[in-house]
Image 1 (cartoon, one colour):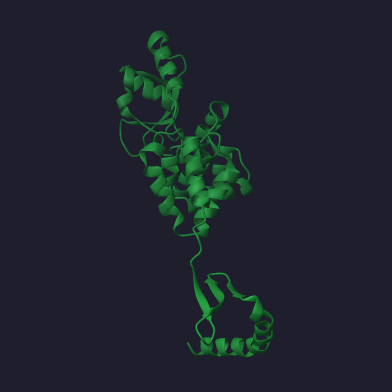
Image 2: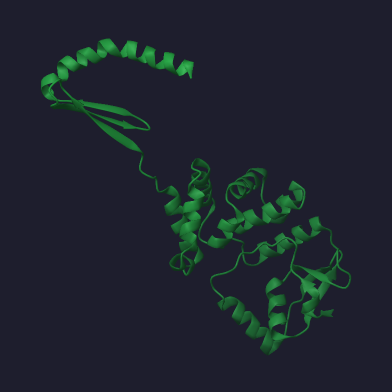
Length: 267
């Protein structure tokens, strides 16, 4: 049947992020304008709004019809949520592949809507381990970060997992990633490049905090240096005193360690 596209809403389970390149859509829109819509989209009756519909697949044709102001040819199906996502996933597999992160978001949104894991696996043609990996990245990376990066079609699972691991390892990473993605220069880049910028800043290790102390002899002359960091204590002694000081430290360290743990136990 032909339906006014204004009466149609998108799928309740979005599976696409904005594309950097509008050329393909513009070609489709021009083709429909010149030759008409050849293939119908698939819709279902809206479960919560009388007289409205939801797209199962064919979002780009629906968008083209809206922009052209023409009726949309559609096949109306009676589908549950589970049947909708499976049909949507099968259609996507047969046409333009989703990028890895779009698949992850699609799985996440189905999870949030209570779709059963077996139906999610069927919609994406994946097994349990891959579903677990898709879920793990979306649990760590906030949706606003993913949307700011975009489709990133050339970025596969390993690098998305690396980004998620970096965010998990350090609380400050998210603020650094958000800051780099909000810059006009980065926003103007293709999504694959935006991902590279985000990963680079996420993996950048901030300098460790450290302090130093000059070691002085009885008359105030510097005989060595102690450097304290979060992971080590380093002592450097002038050559003239190095051997004697080493013997001294070897004797004193056991008692010093004992005093340290005695003090820690009192806290």
